[in-house]
Image (cartoon, rainbow, N blue to C red):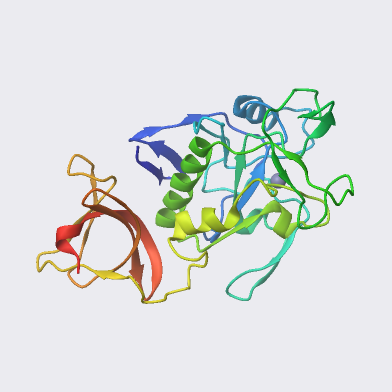
Length: 286
Ligand SMILES: [Zn+2]
C-alpha cells in the first residue's frame, strides 16, 4: 500500500481516505510545518474520535488524522491547515526555534488508543471500564498520571497501526519535509502523557527517517549511491508492479532502511537530509 499526501489530503493507493471534517481548524499555514506530533486519543474507535473532533460539545480539539488500531486512516483536517491538537505547548525545534503553542508549527497524528489504564482485579481496564488484555506495562518518563512510580498498564499499539503511522509520516516527509517527530508528552510534559511509554518513539523515528532517530544524523556508514547513468526509478513498493515516484539521478545518495528480497527501501538524501522515501532494486546501487 502506498500512502501519500496530495493537496493536503491523505491518499492510500491513489484514493483519498475517508474525511470527517473537523470544525476546529484555523486559517491555512503560511509555510508547511516541519514537525509531527504523535498522540493517543484516550478513546475507543478512530471513528468516535473523528466524530468528537466535529462535535459542537467539544471545547475545541482536532488533529489532521486519526489512525485506527487496524491501520485505517480517517482524516479530519487538511494538511494545509492547522489542527487544534497541541494546546498549551512549547518546544525548541532542531533548528533552534523556540515555539510556544505548536498548532501552527506542527501536524497532529492521533492513534486510537485507550492510553493509561486502571487496575481491575488482576487485569486492567480503560477509564470507561473496558477490559484491555495484555497491556504494555511501563512508567511514564514524566511520571505516571496517577502519581505512582510503579509500572502501570497502557494499551499497546498494534503493529498494523504503527506501520500505517510510519507510512503516513513518510508521506509527510515527502510532501512537507518533516524533519522532527515528537510526542504530545514532549511538548506539554506537565499535562499530557500521550503517546506514552507503549509508543516506541526511537523505533518510530528510525522507521520514518531511517537512522538513529534524527534527520540530521548523516553518518556515511552503510549509505548507498545510485549507479546508473540514465538514473534509477524510486518506487512506491518492493517490485516493478509498484508506481514510479521519481527518477533518481546517477550519484544520488541513499540510506537503506529495510530489505525485501532484492529490493531495498531507502531514504533519498539531499545534502545528507532525507527528502523522500521509496524502494530501489539492489542491482542499481553501489
Ligand atoms: Zn495529545
